[in-house]
Amino acid sequence: MSGNRSAALDYAQKNHARFLEELKALVRIASVSTESQYETQMAAAAAWVADQLRTLGMNDVAVCPTAGHSVVCGEYRCSDPQAPTLLVYGHYDVQPPDPLEQWENPPFEPTVKGDYLFGRGASDMKGQLLAGLKAIESILKTDQLRVNLRFLIEGEEEMGSPNLAAFIAENQHRLQADVALNLDSGILAPDFPSITVSVRGLAYFEIRLYGPASDLHSGTFGGAVHNPAQVLCELIAGMHDAQGRVTLPGFYDRVRPLSEAERAEMARLPLDEAYYLKVTGAPALYGESGYTPAERVGARPTLEVNGLLSGYTGEGSKTVLPAYAMAKISCRLVPDQDPAEVYQQLLDYLNAHAPRTVRWEVVQHAGSPAAMIALDRAELTALSQAMEQVWGKKPLYKREGGSIPVVAQLQQIMGMPTILCGFGLPDDNLHAPNERLHLPTWQRGIETLIHFFYNLTS
Image (cartoon, rainbow, N blue to C red; front, side, top):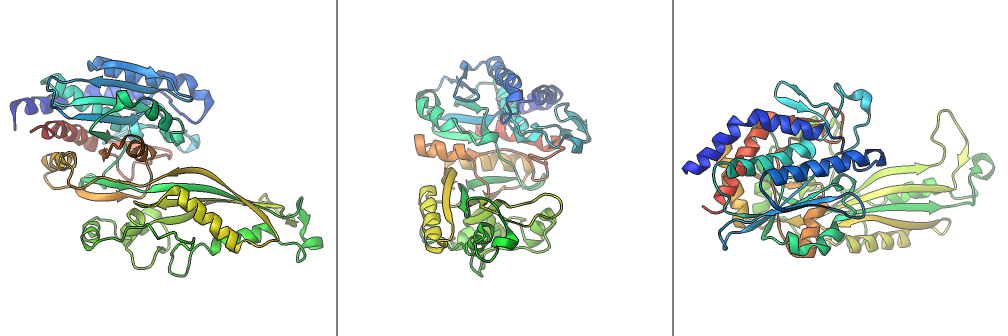
């Protein structure tokens, strides 16, 4: 190990306590992007991140306005004209803290208990963002970075990044890089280093069914007027066949088949049926026939019902035949599937199966394609080597079942691939009460990123 690399790692170890106090300071800022009452705190969080970049010596640091919350930008230019350029991505906003009564400590008063820091945003993703910034600090205080850096730190990720695509399109000159380093990720367990190599896309819809002009007495009109709630249930039930496959016409036409090598790699993951039963509490698993749970979650497309609304749902009984029924439907997509095509496939299904006794419409709320990093990219190799240097074993490659809009946006708008590198854990209670960050893993994450930056140019 080079002397400079050793000095950077030693700096990170010696300054761990200060790094933690700075993370606590950021967690104390209630930067909830989805609620207007937190506008002041959102601005404070953006300013805090910008000050961190300036303290690190970054150039052209700016808090850039959007139609919503601001984006923080900046850059670092090294002396080597041949050096690669990385776009470091993160977000400073957090989920709402509700329900407050389920928190053991106030959500914005960060508390250390044993090996964990508790607080909203501690893991998602203020801890991950600080891991990246503190790795950069550790190198700059002891050496020189041999890569160029640009920063894209947004404030709307937790509300679906509604203004980010426009910002990227309008600011390509200040964001251009060889690859993006997205810190908003995690690993499988403290002793299972892993790298996410793909994320699924998303197509999100709201189906609205209209029957009679107003709610009706179910005794007087039941049996003569078709019930929209019943129609909706029957339509949804028909969206899967007996093998768990989605029945929208053409849904699988673009789905890439899994190769034997890909299936073998996914079989290495500690995500068997027992794991999913344990973490979900479900009595049994369900899914597309012929695939393991890990394959269904990471490499196969899905259609799920996210919400249903119709008729009377209050306490007691009310004999009503509802005039209206609504369902929220999301499809997770895999590489090559197009959200616009899936929207048309849903329309084709409803045109074929919805009866004339109701009127229907579909509202499209969100759509983003899947993204996958080439496994032979030098940056991915550098990250894999860095994890092995810290954990003492090679990381597993995993496919993320969720969606990260910025990954697809950078690919679509700028042709930029993304390396996902974060150190959150599955049991960090993301988006839930008592969110927490495992501090030993966080420290390992800082050290991994130090190795990563050195490995890129070694």
